[in-house]
Length: 369
Image 1 (cartoon, rainbow, N blue to C red):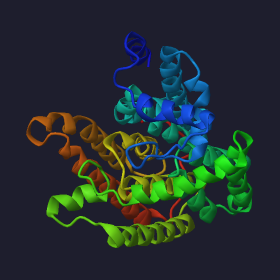
Image 2: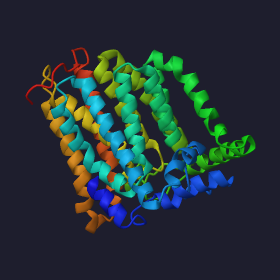
Image 3: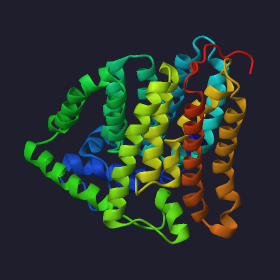
């Protein structure tokens, strides 16, 4: 992050996504202008324009550096809390390995200032809080994730299915999200932006460009992409299957892997079925890959090291192969490879839970792996 900060300070206008969407959205909010111009503009809730405003009003270099440091801090803090929840006092080595596994897929988003990095860190903090049974904190982090990106609603709803204490708090979270923008704008303006974002999200859901790394990245390779109603139906059915898989796994798992299973399902669904998933979006998946890798590597009670090393090998492939293959395939390799690795990751977890779900899956010590 020190290197990235130095690069940003040297030229804050280079390699940044903030100038094309985040800064204009904050400026438009306070000027009472429309936030949405279609899928090429801002694709978040009006909340984001308010939340980004403190960065918008800073000098540009300070704004760009601080925005990236907040994202990195959320990722690092989330990994630390998750490692503590999983391994207690013996968290240092798992935290080191989790950091090493997360960093390669996170650096691109951090360098470009992509909101996916902060979103990934906040969702990670939410899972860590749920693992610690700090329900108000968990639902708060999930609400913040949704305010940052509408994709956060997936984790919010799945977590409410998995944890009754979160389900009881869900109406308060939804109500808080609904009223938040009204504290920072005229009611008629806020209503108009709610109306506009609904149409904007619908336009985003219909995007079929060959530049995204969702499930269509794979299907386009075989000449069978999903579009229109077929794409909407696929997302709906996948959501139902994800909820069913969550309930199935929750009955077979102890507290620690239960939270990790929720985490993996939520972020895998986002990677595969958000039609605007980019290669940089996999910063959201990276901490889930890392969490399961250290769960397998440092689990003294089961012989699962090979699974841990396998996930780390997947992370290395996702980090290195797209660059190595670029001379032959351009940027299209990652559009296929990343969703394929996501599917394989979920297949590994499904097989593991199906075969070992009746045993004690909660690691007690991060001993001498």
